Image 1: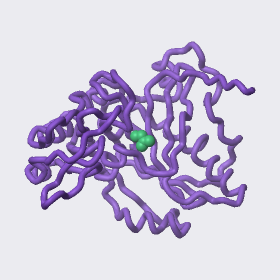
Image 2: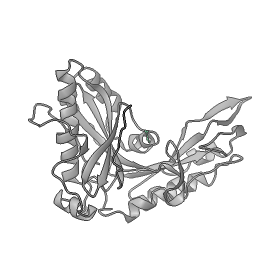
Image 3: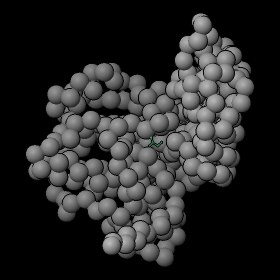
Image 4: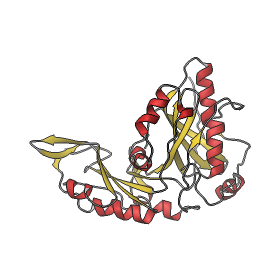
Length: 296
Ligand code: GLY
């Protein structure tokens, strides 16, 4: 009885993460996920086959837009509704020819984005979480490293349609001991003293470095020493970061939001004035893209 027509949004997608205390938000960092199973964004969608952080597409102007036109109005709206929002707000922005649009909100961290954002947080994270939980984010500060992280998901044979389990995993200790590498477990379990696969996305292997080349080398160097039967992964995680405009290193960023600023409310969908028909480059230029990285 009801027909819903949705606009198909086309453009690169950025995940931006904020920690909220009910009134204020602190921007943690940004990342870009790789949803398709195969290299060059081909094949079926998955939960995410890898990510990198920060995204050079998040310029200072876009960061300001996301904070003042998206996040702060959400906090004010939730407060006005008597449900102040405390926790992580994950804003997925699509940079379309018509301008940046919110494609979704999640009230959690991202997977695999968390694995590439968390290693870059230099400050006392637990203390900042406590400050958010107790409405005291204005007193907190959370430095984010200028380093880059690249995370490669190792998945089981058959994923995403199905997932094989119970395959012994070799090389975990060697991988984790490599310079700049961290191995996060997702679909694993212990079986008779051995770590075996237990699901579709098994591990995220993260490499950290002063630039994306170093981070990719660290990640893929660690991937090379891990093995389980049926292991599949993408070979191009991080490549986009090398090709995107403004690939310069991230700046140290430490943003705080004051939700008392005026705003005309959240607009889901097209953001700001109509920019239909203009190129993404032009839209970014209009937003003040200076080739640097803003809300890292
Ligand atoms: N990486 C997508 C998500 O966590 O929803």
